[in-house]
Amino acid sequence: MHHCYLEDFELGQVVETTAKTLSEAEILDFAMSYDPQPFHMDAEYAKEGPFGGLIASGVQTLGIAVRLIMQAQIFAPDASLGSPGLDELRWLVPVRPGDTLRARFEALNARPSKSKPDRGVLRYAFGVINQRDETVMTALGTQIVKRREADT
Amino acid sequence: MHHCYLEDFELGQVVETTAKTLSEAEILDFAMSYDPQPFHMDAEYAKEGPFGGLIASGVQTLGIAVRLIMQAQIFAPDASLGSPGLDELRWLVPVRPGDTLRARFEALNARPSKSKPDRGVLRYAFGVINQRDETVMTALGTQIVKRREADT
Image (cartoon, rainbow over all chains, first blue to last red; front, top):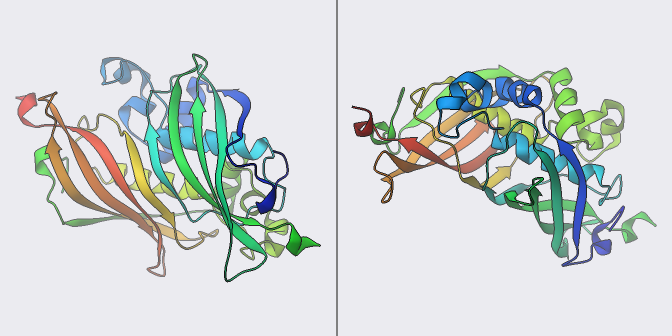
């Protein structure tokens, strides 16, 4: 699946993206701005904390998933019209400094809008997998996507 | 509610946090790393795009909610033991450069763990409100939280 409009998604087909290695500096930097909890932003404290070391904010893991899926160009450059939300976001395994993460994307359902003929609603499952092939995060996404017909 | 352990949350009581104004530079910076879609990272393109201008990544809005809630110190400094996930995350209104955002937090349920006597599970509703009092995001959060008894 590449440069898809609504009717191009192949339901049930799984795309795995390229990988991104997350540094301790990136974890600390994100935590300072968006998730200032001790086990996300203080490596010394984190050693004695609930995870036995520094872990990435789950919001950062979500952001990495979105980045990798967008970089994979599954969507056509102008196809995404935004997202009304996410469901069942689950953080399953801690993400630690040096972990190499890739994303997984699977289109579940693509339904044309009844009120707006140029677009529709894509439902998809996505997740993040680390270098040990552990699934560290899963979620169900919804995206408003342009239809191809409306472009021609 | 301030510096809460599991048994301290007052169910149904709403906390509103301080506010944070989001700059165009912060929106662009976040989008480059975590949500590289044109309407999040290209102000010129975004003018002609689906939102008529640049908007913040929904992941960034979520991060700001987490930041504001953590900064409000609703949780005791060592009370959070991480989050297994979020549900029903909804982005309702676009967030634009210069918007001033505050978060809303409401504890819904606090249940001691059956297997681990030092902790429990907090369910809470949270959201983000802009300077026009529009609710721009809502979600249901789950947090593993220490019990006070286990500390003494």
